[in-house]
Length: 81
Image (cartoon, rainbow, N blue to C red; front, side):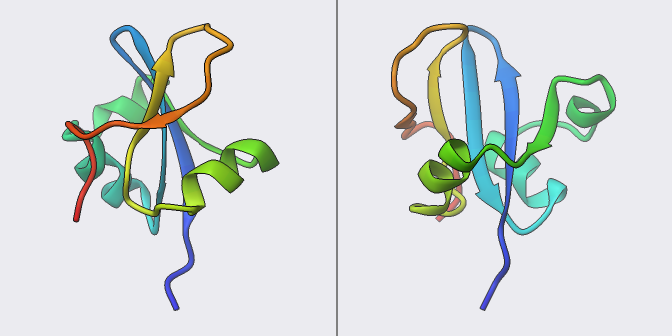
């Protein structure tokens, strides 16, 4: 069984989270470059609420408007099969 970590990134107008086995896999889901982590725009998170959301659908990117109190929702334009 694959062990997933949860990563968060700020992409444009959105806060995003994804459950992925590695940073590299998270970057693939976000269709982004490795510098996203190096520049501080992405990080691994351990918040139980975010982990619960993201691990329901691993490798699917969830998003909400940056800074809003909205719920994270799956984003069809990001993610991997």
